[in-house]
Image (cartoon, rainbow, N blue to C red):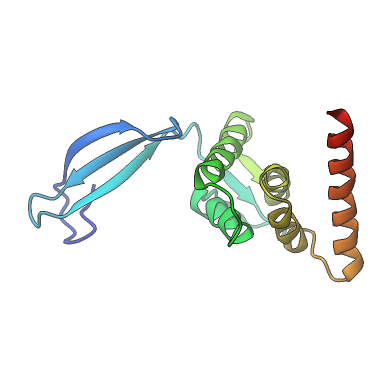
Length: 158
């Protein structure tokens, strides 16, 4: 692992332990050249996933981009970062275990919408407004009606 401070290729692992979500290994490293300390995370990757964009273009799947999507939708919302990490890990696990090597961006977007629906209604509406390309106030009203119907169903089930 290359040192992020001096660029040396000779870093040493000082400590390894499972990360909080138990889907990755957290490693504390030190650079013998500059003395810099840093943390890396190691995750299992079952297969190399490609994302098939709406334009037909293919791009490698980027977990960090998925995390950023959640962070943008959940900006200034009271959601624990561990819940976000669990949602992202769940989506990645489902994508990798689907057996497909090419996943459409629409499928990923639907999975993000489903996860946001359980995490935070405001974030769900934010993401849906971009994902579903809202152009009128009625689009927001329809999604809010959908959320209200879900809340009504959930409260009558109790």
